[in-house]
Image 1 (spheres, helix red, strand yellow):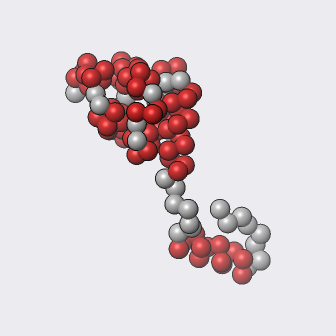
Image 2: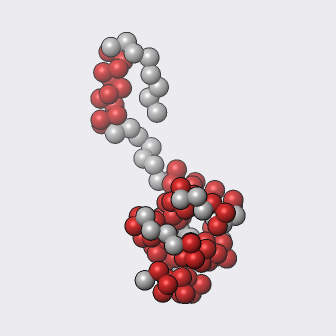
Length: 116
């Protein structure tokens, strides 16, 4: 399967590329040749070809690659930054009920904290 994905990486649409990269990242199995092929294809397309969700998926792939000590195969910083920004943009702009409850308890206890 990895060999097939590696061979076809250059022909994937942005959606296919993001989905395949994300799938391999969550499998926690990233063969070096596949990482290089996917990263190269992502670099060729550039960040503007990927929608927000796809950039978020690619961010998870890039983090997985970096955690496995293969950062040298990551695409240029512009692509990495665009993907990280996509993740940040998808974060809810309000606190969850649990977060609010914990914050309220801390405040009642007089514990100084920052409600992010």
